[in-house]
Length: 218
Ligand code: SAH
Image (cartoon, rainbow, N blue to C red):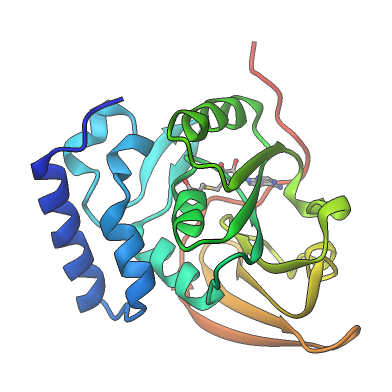
């Protein structure tokens, strides 16, 4: 793994200022982004650009979300220490590590076998102990670990994933981008056994939420 050098730290401080200018106000989220070396989650080819506010390819046709998007979703989720959080779409692992840095217990699922293995190994090497990785179809969530305090979907869904809503505790929140080409950010709170309240926020662009697992390509 590359070192975390002075220049990376400087670039991170500038990224945090950019996020502040764009309207992110949650200080805990900004501190987490300021502390986590994003270049560890990208191919070394992107090292110099790792602290631009942009999404980048991580292989297997997937992307690491733009820092603004990570900050926005994390702020909406309103993470509290020790909360049990399900993340759907592990990808590079960056978002999971941001949630872990906020003190959550993170359960993250990825449908692509290659990405699952690569990221699980990275998380082990980083010695982040409050993240568990699963190779699963995120549409189904993780029924045996439910209910979750919070659920975060980091791929664009066509409609509200009902099985995920059902895995929220009462009072819990589901943050999910919904839409085909571009998505609106939904924050859905479970008010009671059968009542959910949705609030809709700004427009974003995500890779698609796909059903089923994808095994290693031969
Ligand atoms: N949170 C990631 C963003 C990755 S992009 C990060 O910080 O890097 C979204 C990820 O969702 C991709 O890796 C994609 O393979 C995964 N994905 C899409 N549909 C899924 C599903 N049904 N179950 C689990 N993961 C899914």
